[in-house]
Image (tube, rainbow, N blue to C red; front, side, top):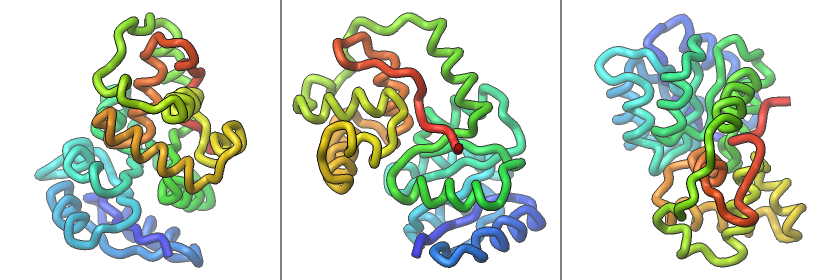
Length: 222
């Protein structure tokens, strides 16, 4: 079962999300939080697989809450607003995904499964904006701290992250088991001091090194 914590300050929205997630046979809602501070406390206590996080909440907003918990659980940000400050803020904070609240029920559940499996996911309309942002920005010629510590295999995986490939796609390309891919991704995040694979994908996009390049920071929902 995938354990999910739902964090949203609107009771009606929380109820709707709980209803959608509860209908999935492999998902269980472990708890509900009405603000960011409560989400952080409950995430630390319950250790869910995924936190479904709203952005605009009282006491502590969703971006600050994500920054607090992204190191030990995956956060999928779900918001009504697709403003750049929220998108980039959430991804910099370590969110594993960013979706808009107009996503349909089936795609929301699939996104939760995707994040729980260790992949990142971003709403298509947001992905297009991110691609546009990277297209107009020159890559940095300097190696980021920790990159020199990656093994040759880890650098290959890092490059694949920059192309927006999922764990399964990376495993197919590099001819290795998906569990091995997950291990490599985890080690890459640790060596680079990152909280999510989306952050790694963005860093790969920004790094001007042979074999380290890509076209999108994360895969879209089909």
